[in-house]
Length: 370
Image 1 (cartoon, one colour):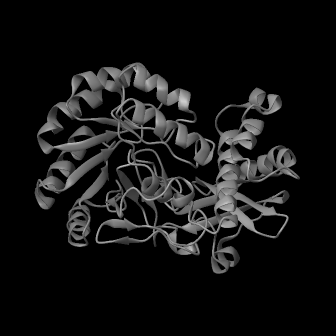
Image 2: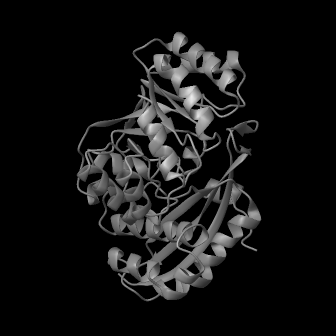
Image 3: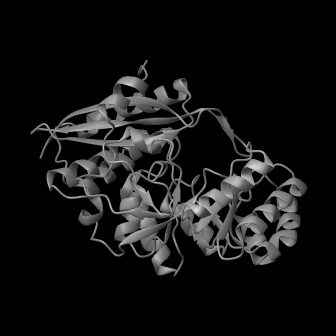
């Protein structure tokens, strides 16, 4: 099926009734910035990247889609996704201006839209197109109860409520001070007991000295992983931390290529891989990371820049993807919202990648392209 039209879009969807914060960011909306690809029969595929809903930045992404990527796709065969991925990724002018950042996340939106279109044209859910169902349900871990902006008493109540709702894993943010975050970690562990997996996420804020000090004191809290403990590209520092603590190191949301993951693996600096389809040129490149992880016997827990609308399909089709993040901010803005029941994702049933916005969201949250 030939590609007839490529159009960009921007949605800014409220995250909660108020702002939330981690160690490096404070936001009130999540940006769903993407591409709608229309085939010659009128079928539309939707793909998007996740942003902090900063309109000038989001307009740079849509401009890249409309002016740089769309001309490479129009009139081509939508079914030949691997070749189209190479056509964009190896386009000399795009390589010259960047192999990460705006060009890559714009590519992510386009690649996801192509996968959504391909699954729709075959009238099946994306996880079936990717190889079928390897499990009946996917274990979810709740991140939304753990923001640094949440007061200590509310954090504890939220963790207990998540467990009562059936979640067997939760994640809380760290990266304020070592002393405060140790206190919060220990309070949550005491509140939820030892049977619930408890992960932490630093969003790259601390230096190696603070990470070492924190991990030394936190090991008796049975931390499932320490996500983004250090600056995203500091491979050697991650390797040193990994050698110095029994707490597993997780990262990947700020990596843009399979080569970046390979470097962390080669330096023994990572235990959990967290690729994100909205950051690293879409489903096509993340599938390569999953295969890399499988070859090294390492588990994958995709980062939810898409709020797991798309990643759930990867988890249902690949045994290496063992758990999946739950953040429910944008799910109700899609025709088939990601569904978690008693702490487990349920397999999507509609054709496509679960990436089609509702008409209500389209009308309520859409922002100008310029």
